[in-house]
Each structure stands twice: as C-alpha cells, then as structure tokens.
Image (tube, rainbow, N blue to C red; front, side, top):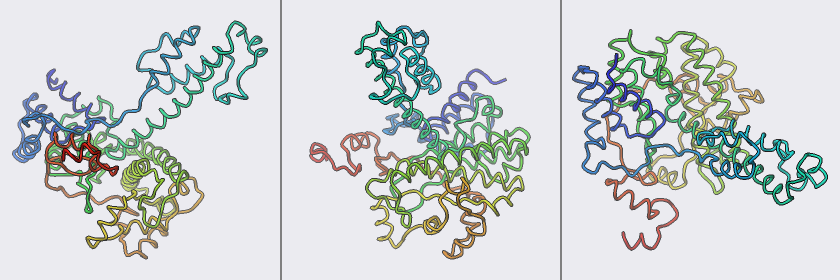
Length: 460
C-alpha cells in the first residue's frame, strides 16, 4: 500500500501527461516518489535523476520559467451558454448546466437542439433569410407572445453557438493531435493503469515530458527523447520485468522489447486505436491541403500555408504510423504492408531555415523527395490510390535511401540514449539563457518575425 504522500506524487506525475512540465521538474518528482516509498535506487539511476533534478525549478534560485507549462486549451462556450440562459428561460437544461459543460461538445449540442425546439428551429438551420419563421409560422408554433426582435436574438444566438461548437470541436481535435504527436497515447492513460507500477509510471512521465519539449530553431537535428535519464529508468524496468506494466509502456515506447511483453489482445487494442487515429489525422492533413495546397517538392512554407496545423498533424501522423508499424511487426502481420504501406509526412520548413541549411552545406532532407513521389496519405487510406511496399521501396531506391533504416517500410530503429541537456528557455524557438530576459524579449516581439516595437528596440 502506497503512503498518502507517494499517492499524491503519483497523481501529480499522471497529471503531467497532459501538461508541459520541464523534464527536470518531472525528474525531481520522481526523486520525491522514490523517497516517499523508501525505494533504494541503484547508482546509475540515482546519478541520472540527480543530474536532471539539479536544474528543476525547485532547485533554481528564481524558481521560474518563462514558458507555458500547459498546452493551449480551447476556449469553451461559457459565455454563449450564460447568454442562452438569459434568453431561453423556459429551457430547464440551461439552468442545470455547470461550468464543465462548456467544454463538452455533446452537452453543448444537446442544449442547442433543445433551445432550438423552443423557437421552432431545427439544428443546422442557420440561414437567417430562409430558415427563420415569419409571424404566421411563429403563431402556429406557439410563439405568438415572443416579439420578432426577441425571436431574432434567440435565432442569432443559436446560429453563433453552432459556429462556436464547430470551432471548439476543431480546437479540441487539434490539441489531441498535438499531444499525441509529441507524447503518443500517454495523455489517454487512465490513472489506474498508469499507477499499476511506480517504476513504469516514472519512466512514462519522464519520457512524455521529454517528448513534449518544444522545437529549437536550428539547422540540425532536434533533441532526442530517449536520453540517459530515460535509459536509466528503463533499465530498472528491464531488471524486474515481472512487475513492469508493459501494456502501459506500449502506449508511449513501442520498442520490440516492450511490445514482446504485451499480449496479442492488448496489442490488437492498440492497433485499432492507432488505425482510428491515423484516419483522424489524415482528415486534418487533407483539410489543410485543400485550403492551400503546399509546395510538395520542397515543403518550404509559402504565404497562405497553415504551417501550424500542418506541422502538428504531420508530427502526429508520423508518431501514429511508427506505433502502427511496430505493432504490426510484433503481431507478425507485416504482410499487410505488401498491399498497404502509407508513407511518412514531412513538416513544413520556414524559408529562413531552408536558406540556413543551404548556406551550411546541407539541403532538403532526402525524405522530402520520397514523400513528393508517393500518393497522399488520405488518398491511400480511402483506397483511391495504391501504395504497396514495393512502390515505397522503388522510390527509396531512386533516391538512394534505405527504406528499412529510414523507417519507410519498417518500424523505427531502437533509439540510442543521448546525453542529458537542460531544457533551454525559448523565445519563438531561439534559446535564451535567462527566463526573465526571455519573458521580456517575448513581450517585446523579438524573434517573432513581425519586427520589434520601437520601445523594445530602445530597451535593447
């Protein structure tokens, strides 16, 4: 039985799976968890955790970071529901609503439908010229006592509420896509499964925090997730496999070693979940593409491109695809790839970064050329175009790219642990040494690409 203190720490670690805590702060929580449980750590784990926790906010003199410790959350329909409660006083459902309902699309839709019935309006009837009731129709619907002005106000509000609901659903989907692209299915882990084994929970929380780290403005590789701290925590799991919750681990770390310890039934559950998510992300990619087709041969951002949505969706697609490939391989179903082998999706690159690559002797990533020749992912998922493994191998061969090592036709190779490096304070991707300076630079608009305000220029 865990002590109350250890239970509280576990819950805080679980909460971090939907937040953006610095890996250093998660490492400090893990230290606290082991101390609360009286766990004696091996030297390697103790050293690795100490190296990371040394830079936690609790150990720094200022105890401050300029970066948000949460992902952007969609704004709910609190304001619209409050207004509806004043206009639709005859709808009891509005009086029973709590604040949490403003973030629940199903409950919001139910309210819109019920309120619409009270004025003779069906859900989706949003044409202000065609769908409103005239005086005779309002009288026939029992609305004779409602003035035209009051009726119009209610009609307009419901129309705005439907638009708000559509935006809320879209933003919630984008948030899920962002979380999944960076941390796989960690955010979906229920507390009971997460807390089955504290050592497993420690690894998942730390690896997820590493995955959630922001991208740095660079012409080289981004920081890798699997570092020496994660490796030390994973070695503890490997040392006592009978207590490790491998199924929970498979949600975030789909190596062959992890998946081999998971039952076929649980692997199939994960495969179905990833298959569903791939279709969801493909719709998001297609929507972004249809709104403004990209320069596919270079994947360099042009004016009008929705690079934020595309890059979030591309990262999520590649993460989901990697998990899907790994599970297929473990289940022995790789033959599916002979008929159905969707490709990877590259992120859009800013023109200045592309120029930096060229000036430093680099160029486009070789995967860009392969992506440009393969069918688009949503076309493959819908069966409109074929993308068998043989096609992917042929395109890779033309561009001298190993399809297995490049994870085009096989799961990603197991990552080698990299050295721990402390989390930098970033201002629009540019590392800044001091968090207080970072706050000032961000407020002044420095590195934003929009030019500094005059006051900021004078201050600098």
